Amino acid sequence: RKQKPGLLSNPLRVFSTLTGSSSSSSAAAAASPPRTHQRPPKHQQSASLSSLTSLSGSLREHIFGSATPASSKDGLANDWYAEGPGRRVGYEDLTAIDWIFEYTKERQRLRVLASSSGGGIIGYVRHLLDASQVWIVLLLTGLAVGVIAALIDITTDWLGDVKLGFCTSGPEGGHFYLNKNFCCYGYDQGSKCAGWRFWSEALGIHSAGGKWFIEYFFFLAFGVLFAYCAALLVQEYAIYAKHSGIPEIKTVLGGFVIRKFLGPWTLVTKSFGLVLAVSSGMWLGKEGPLVHVACCCANLFIKIFPNINNNEGR
Image (cartoon, rainbow, N blue to C red; front, side, top):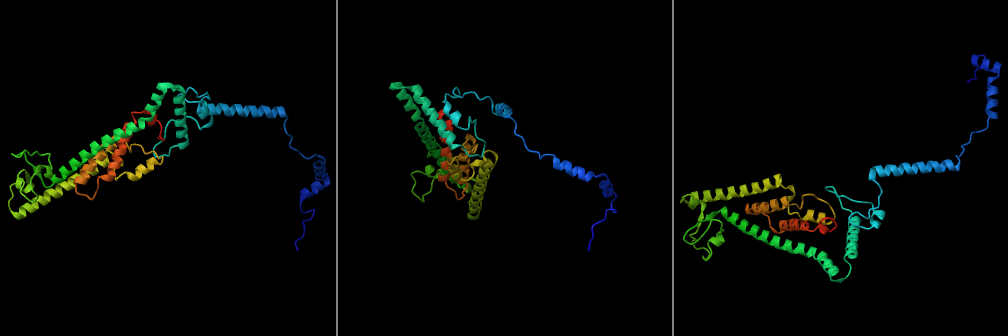
C-alpha cells in the first residue's frame, strides 16, 4: 500500500514547518474578508449610458448620413421615412424587390397627388391623366407588337421560300422580295408559275438528278446559315433572347429583377433571331417568343412615364 511521504523527504516542508509560514498564510486568508462586486453609483451609470448613446448616434450618422427629416425628399411625407427602412436607391441584378416598400411608395405618391391637386376640374383632370398612363402604355404596346409581328411573319415566309428559289421581275410584275404565294398569286395550285424560279433553273441545270442535288443543297445550306446567324446574334448581343422567355417573364412578374432581359437590344435580337430560327426550318413557333417581344415593347414605353418607371412594383 502506498504510503504518504514523510516530513524529512521534502526539505521545503521542513522549512515551512519550522518557520510557521503555512499557518500564517492560512490565518491571513481566513482573516481577509471575501471580495464582492460593488456596483458603481447611479450618476456614473447614467454618464456611461449617455456616452454609449452619443457614440452609437455618431457612428450611425457616419454610416447612414445625418438623420435629417425626409419630408423634403421627393415630396413624400415623414411617416414613411420614420416607419420604413429608409431611402432605397435601386435594386441589384438578380435580386427580389421589396413589395412593401414599393406599395408604400405608390401610396405616398397618390397621397401627394391628391393633396396637391385639390378639387375642381383641374384636380379631376390630373387624376385622369395619372390613371390613363397604364392604358396608354398598353395601347402603344399593342400597336407596336402588331407591326413587329406582321414584319416577322412576312419576313419569315420570304426567307422560308428563299431556300427553294426566288421571284423574278418579269412581265407579270414580280419582285425579289415577294414569297412564292404572292409571286404566284392568281395561279391555280399545281400550275406552272412563270415568275417563280427554282435554284436549279436559275443555274441552268435540266437533268433530274442535278435538279434534286442543287435544290437539296440550297435548301440545306440556307437552313444551316439561318440557324447559325440566329445563334450568333443571341450569343454575342443578347443572351436573354434565347428560349421563349415565358418562364423568365413569370419570374419578373413575381418581383425578381433581371437586368437587360427587357431591354432594347433584347427586343432587336429576339425579333431577328425569331425570323432566322423559324426560317431555318427548326421545329419552333412564333407565339411564345412574341410574348417576350410584347413585354420588351411595354418596358420601352414605360420609360416615357416616370411614375411607372420609378416603381418596380408597377
